[in-house]
Image 1 (cartoon, helix red, strand yellow):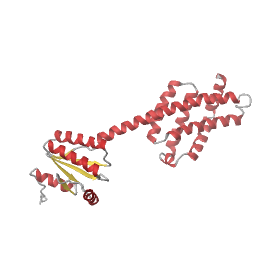
Image 2 (cartoon, rainbow, N blue to C red):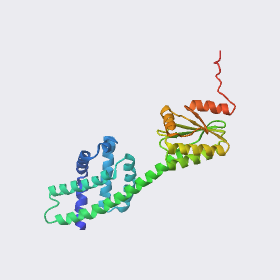
Image 3 (cartoon, rainbow, N blue to C red):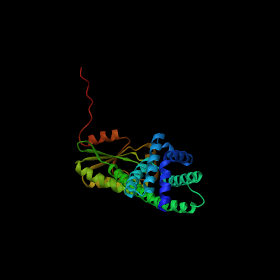
Image 4 (spheres, one colour):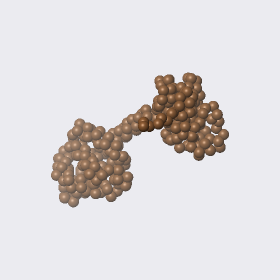
Length: 280
């Protein structure tokens, strides 16, 4: 087995550039457009070369080198948006290209064919499983980090004037996000000593009964800590939806735009915006 192993390793190393070229051509023919268009030809070629080096390091038995390269490669392809099916298909494409080339060159012949088949299978099956495992773990880690980052950025309470803070809401509001909004709202109102809090729903695509319920609860919570709550950014279609659903928003002030909301908040805190003339 070790002799056959060396034969295959030597063949791959000696014909690496030809194998890489055929692998890229074959992969581009079968890959989805979004995979190809996501990166430039140069990045695709470089990354493909790294993939081939990764496979070779495993074939040569360089386990530590393979594990390090696999971890780095998995992080890179996840960032590039390459799906797992593309990566595993690429591994099988490499196996097929090498096997066919070795057959054509006579390196694989009738006498050693079965041994070679077993040898290829002994390499590529565990390597495929390892790649799937590391890729999946990297993907889960990436998604987890992105979710944490989104939660940190989600619904911040921004002080705009002394005693006046704004919470801009963007995107769909579900139950989990509503809890995050409530927590950020209360903590921020206390931290910034807010007298008036403006909840800006300009970036919320749909306001249904559930969303309105969460907003009402948030407004009531703000009122309980001694601040006033104002709902701004109510577009005509949102206003119509609220009316049609019979949602009662009478318990707090509403404004169509953030600008009007800030002007009203200044008035509530006994301030106003005054235009001054330019210097003569």
